[in-house]
Amino acid sequence: MKKSRTGIEGLDEVTKGGLPYGRPTLVCGGPGCGKSTLSMEYLIQGALELDEPGLLFSFEQSEQDIIQDFSSLHGMIPELVQKGKLYIEYIDAGPAGQAQAGEFTLDALFLRIEAALSRVKGRRVVLDTVESLFQAFPDKNFMRHELRRLFTWFKEREITTVITGEAGEHSLTRWGLEEYITDCVISIDHRIEEQSSTRRLRIIKYRGSAHGTNEYPFLIGEEGVSIIPITSLGLDYSVSSELVSSGIPDLDEMLSGKNGFYRDSTVLISGQAGCGKTSMAACFAASVCAAGESCLYFAFEESPQQILRNMASIGIELQEWLDRGLLSLKAEAADDDRLGAQAPRDDIDGGENRACRGGYRPYNESHQRRLDSGSKIHADPIHGFFERAPHYYPHDTPQQRLRGSHGDSDRHFLPHGYLDHSFQEAQRRLERTALIEIVKSRGMKHCEERRAFILHDGGISIREEGEDSHA
Amino acid sequence: MPKKKRSEDERLRIVLYIMGNTPNSRKAAKNLRKVCEHIQEYDLEVVDIQEAPERIKQDQVIAVPTLIKVHPEPQRRVVGDLSDGVKVRAALGLDDEVE
Image (cartoon, rainbow over all chains, first blue to last red):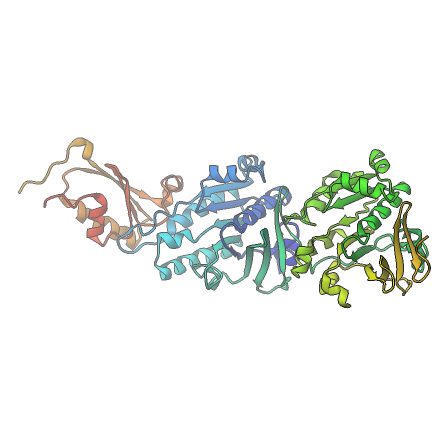
């Protein structure tokens, strides 16, 4: 099946190659969900990357307003318009309930589209949103007939069309567009959960093609639109048999290689607040830098200064690596949907990766609320960045995990190694003892027992349980 | 009774957009003539959309036939073959005309 590549990050993956070529696709969702942005992105990517001119027929905004609205996202629109790679035409459907006296057709609209198409020689068209026509011409049967005629006309000319539709209360779109745009239907959902906004995209149907069926996080960032294709996460990345130290010799000792984790693995560190997850991440970062490689450290909880001060208190000096440019410390509040997706991506794409050639990326994210609510979406976007290098991903253990089972949310991280930390209230002692256990370490044998985890002035030590840890 | 005479600045200016020689085009032209037969003087421009794509873009025409009253203000438009004379008269502001 021939497809029209969207050029939108992630969307081509979940659609297995793009939109159905030469056919109409319906993109629907509530107000502000990003329909227009996604459609515009489709045209811009076509014009920029594939040398395929595109046409936008907007029923809601003038050309000037559109250019202005998109100027922060796509400043090059006027240039594309000037070069004839992008064509924008405002179509005023007229006021609701305008005077009708007898029979008519929408041939003038067709003619305008045809005239624009022959001038721009476009292969992709966006109609945003054709529903304004229903308000101007409320006769549903008439509109259905005319729109069918229009879509057939597009199909005959093999023009790939994106039609946007406002979500209805009991149907996908208010005017039932899904009844006759049946080749491909994409729904975007914009919801606010616990004060944070998330957009998700789902392919409801795609005739004649396999497609991803999940809800995918849909992000509108400074670099445009992207979709995080969770299931289509490529699992074919190259693997390394080289070992990288965890930065804690005692921990390395617990792994069969005696020398740490595989270079390309992802390690999840879980545990209660205060048990030493951040310290472990810092140890790792410091050892990476000490080996002369670079490290990009994302902190979602503390400021860089706090991390530097706190880690210095247990003898882990990070300042030196910052000064030498081997360590990059990024503090980012984990409160919006940039969490774990856009923020690391911006940094990685934006040259940071060059600064951090090694690409080690410890994440320090412990957004309890999100993990507790069982929302996997927030955690998932991080997947995409797990390839290539070892990642440390410490997060707080939700309470229920302490009762024995490992929560479902963990599996979504696809960790290759999993260290669990817990506190044991010592029966006959008054102090708390932190324990560490390697839950799994894929591809290598590891120590099965829980050991005492000790933070001290000189860093982190791990001892066998029962062995006196007062040392 | 004599027909009410319009002053020069009230002279009706209308544009009828049609598509070629289609039944709707012919009906609209005929119906418009009937509505306007009592008006002494008016300017009518007939535009065939097939020959003026730029014009229909500029005038935001999407349906055919479309009748636009350009003058006097306010602008009014009626779509359809103009078979409903009452609506056409209302749009053209002819209701106060005495026959």
